[in-house]
Image (tube, rainbow, N blue to C red; front, side, top):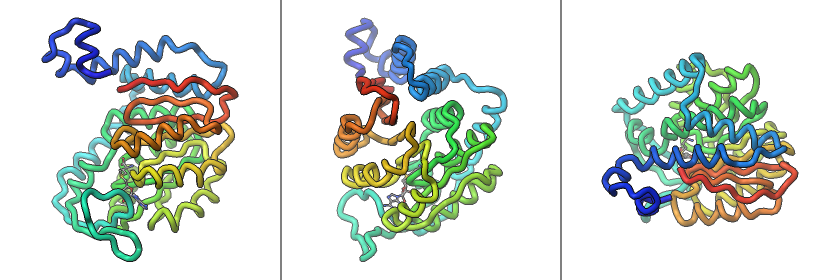
Length: 293
Ligand SMILES: C[S@@+](CC[C@H](N)C(=O)[O-])C[C@H]1O[C@@H](n2cnc3c(N)ncnc32)[C@H](O)[C@@H]1O
């Protein structure tokens, strides 16, 4: 729902709505989530609970302690003045030159990488809650970056007392920072595979199958998202869940998400504007649920 619709529906001044837009959206989404009919499907019910608790900021003291540590690590990375060599196999703006292996090499500040590419706290908490509720045993993530989204998932796995995350990153120095992130948070339930997805993904899929939770936050090209969707689907658990990040980030990401939503092998989907969540094996072809946060 955009500002104009909110203004029209609630008769509020534009300035107030603009300022409070995220808050109003969250309230509306929370209301809509509570009104959703309770499905027989357990995973959909758990996803719904995870979203409601994230929107209500409902976290136990123990959970908050883990989340605070992650945010401290984020602040440390955002203050870093270190320069690193980035090896980017994914999306690139403009006409940057790729080398023979398909990568674009550049130097970047750690703080900029963290600010531009890491999951924001709200969405990190949602990922954390999804892991807490769904209690996955095997998790895979594409796109580790400096390790923040991995930290949210691995912290939730630690609190669950079970589960392992395998995450993939193409840029070696960035993968090294992610290792430090996990080490500094005492997370020993994560492994980071370094290299282009084209060379690392298959092995990780084989070692992780059946995958309960698959978080795709890597290459933001339509074709890459669809290829990874196709390649990974048969490695997912019968009731596995796919979370795609940035599904509204560009028209091509949007197009990829709509194709996933419409795929006959997916039983239910939730479109949260930033996250697209696709569920397998719910035993129904539910309507695509849209909750634009
Ligand atoms: C958006 S960032 C991931 C952010 C991270 N999930 C977080 O929120 O903390 C995407 C990462 O995927 C990596 N990546 C993109 N395409 C890739 C590819 N084809 N192979 C390997 N790594 C890739 C990039 O190097 C980048 O660090």
